[in-house]
Image (tube, rainbow, N blue to C red):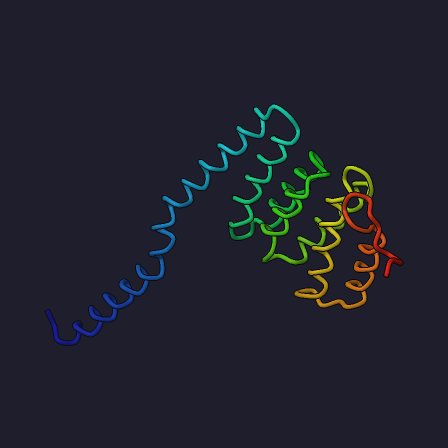
Length: 173
């Protein structure tokens, strides 16, 4: 071996070491990806075998929660949360799960909440879910989306709906 080739060998070894270090996360993620895929397959099976709409909506939310944690899974999670909210539009729990699952994607969450508000009546059996959506939208506009005018408007809409159970607090001192 020549003395001149020693630096080339060291540079090649260093390059391969850095390359393996950089590729390491994707090599080790195979097990996690497989587990995630199996969990999503199980959630989809529960969606198909759900006995009623409420159980089906919960299973869809489970699938959406799994998809929302993936990189680039925001669009799929949005579709699944919308599907769950269409299945059981008067569930406050589903609204809370959508808010939690899409907390890192405020624009996507905003779209889901507005669609939910457009699809359900704001009074009656779905009134509590509408109030939860209004509260979540107001928190979005007060927080990450920073639109004070919309936040105030949603606050006024929330006050107009009143308290759960039909008790209206507007005008009472």
